[in-house]
Image 1 (tube, rainbow, N blue to C red):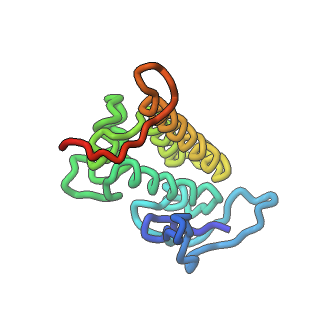
Image 2 (image 1 turned 60 degrees about the vertical axis):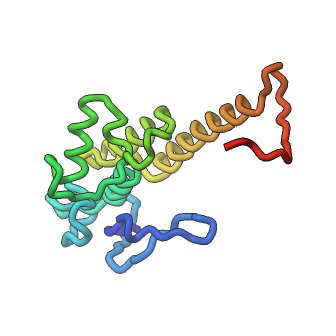
Length: 186
């Protein structure tokens, strides 16, 4: 099944913040067996559409991967997909131009005030860029995308744990943390 309209407004969060994909009105089902694509009229949202699907009317399982890559870019950058006030209005072209400089701080959402792990952020950004490869055959499948996102999370969690461990170690090098009822001075 190909959703055909994966976009940030179609991803809902459950009570435990688990993501749920909504609005299957445009979805298409086709036999995966020997077919690599189906020819169909283009449907979806501008900015999220796979270029191969848009230009050739070829819908593949990797069409949704492209759209998900756009969603990842939105999450990482805090930027809308299309912003006319940017020098490069389309998020893909904007991100590519900033990536050419190799400065992740200019790409990651400025509302994070540089309070993010660069290693996991680079990995997530590289994943997003692989998802939006113009050639569907060069994109990862969603199983690979999920695996790499979990790796990003593991990197972040390991660094957070090490940071917490370092903060709870006193000057003697012991791993004991002390809790006091005495209010601290402000």
